[in-house]
Length: 229
Length: 120
Image (cartoon, rainbow over all chains, first blue to last red):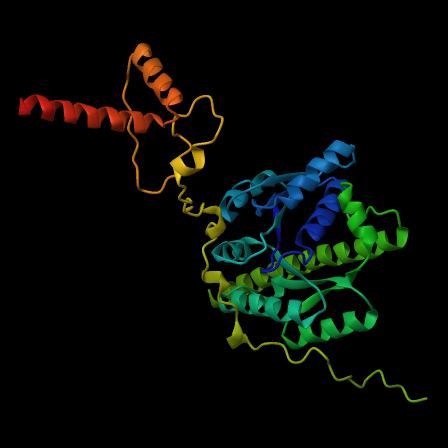
């Protein structure tokens, strides 16, 4: 069974494609058959980046393809070890469809209340539709200072959600790397790469944790069924 | 010095929205509706006064196609022989008239001729 990780947001420019690419790069580097499903057909940010990367001959090759709807993207999931959904800059019925099947739904956000407040509302909407809270996670992006990160993290916790450990700092080097087809884990600066790598690792660990809780829940249900029978 | 790490600072971000303030966006259709700006606007064409502005112009062939759409005129197309076309355009050129003005004059002359014949 393939793993599906979705990056969603009602806003553009929060870091969906940035994190989707970095995760895809690390997964491809680790030998996983990976695909980025770019659902933003109007902008095609990840598809364009894929083309730039191919043109520059950067290894590993990270596959990206545009899909008009979530359903189309999910149809190809079985062909990959990891399907990364890079959502459009809006939420809709499609977001709910994605959240229902994804193993992890990541919503990147900046540290301003203008970014955080609507982002919390989007996760509230998913929770109201029955999506388990433990597969919803924030990823902090474009962070300026440790104090800013701490405050954003506290805000998210107070809202009842978690933010992945680590964050992406506001650095021109990240933009520069992506302009040339690289991921944020492939900049010219080892420190920035390590920071980005830690965030992606936290994301992967979160998927693993969620998978474990799913297994535990299944085992518990089986135990109860056996006891009742 | 006292260890203040256990004390929480006042947040400048305020309280997050409660669950009741969930976004309504999940009801939105997955495919975004087209932007209104993609629909070409209806252009209202300027009305020009053809004869007054064109009398002094040095235009070798004037066929009236440059007349702006205003609702005052409509398309009138027919097939004619090359000789008729050449004759009509030559007259229009010579008299510095639009093709339609020559045709209007011709129609007037025809009606007048009919009336004259009928009066005889």
